Image (cartoon, rainbow over all chains, first blue to last red; front, side, top):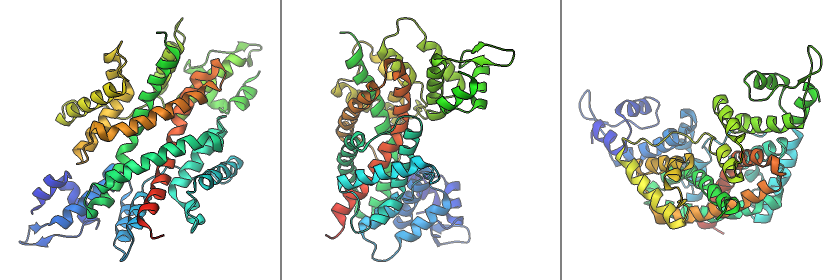
Length: 215
Length: 215
């Protein structure tokens, strides 16, 4: 297909595709004339993944390039492919290790992961350096610093709810063909975040009406 | 208490408190000398709420002023107080009503809320103009436009999970004294978002290991 069709089918503008080509995020098409190139299904799949990372996930171009390189390693298990792509997503500020509240937040996070059996026994250090672990520690530190400390017991019901959600999430990913699953995992991880947060706020309104409104 | 103590107890810097005073977000202290004023517990509570809205919730100063004015209305029920403060939080871009995908996303959201019994029978239009409803519609529109349409059936398990979470959330809010609950609701709504999203990504990693890694 030509560039215009690649753009129409991917939903990415021609100018943006040209930018991705210049940045090496997309491999060049097969040149057919001096000014035209031909693209195939492989380009389309790659472009959808690049779009999921950059446009949807707001991953910086340089990180997206690293993710794409990592995904091309031979013999990478599906688990590692999904992890590589999803863990490249931005996860907010890292924990401030000079803050004493951070050490306490780490203990809470470690105890929680231990109780849940999520600590990846084979690689506990890998879990502790994972972006979502750092995201959790930063959030727990901020809560404590603002006067809302939360205990492992407070967190457990939230973690169990997220474990159930993760099953539904991976079921959604598995509806896609195997070679589209990495893109789907990135896109659905990011795109369902506002869905979940919007539903949570609507559920608050409902629960608040139930508790505090007359009749 | 003096300004320095108000700063220490609230965790808000003196410079920021002076800014809030100039902007009318905090009422002036009782003047004791030409250069010093005395602040009380009421200032401390108000300051914590302002901080929750602006520093934690990233609500613009002008919106924070409106929220504070709304909260002072006489006879406002607790439900309305919580809703007024929490619904002032930023909720991302509004739905693009010129996009046909938006109309379809609205139908999905309406059917979901109907099935859940969250439609606030007394005021269906109030639900449809609520910020979290608009947040949900925008997210569903984006999903559909990128090739990941989701049905009411896909969304139901997420909504049920969030309904359980809302019960835990309001239990946490109720641990605080009544005059601190509006601030707590704002702070916990915002501060638990990265906790939930971090736990979800950790749960993904766990579920992905379970499905795809060799024992």
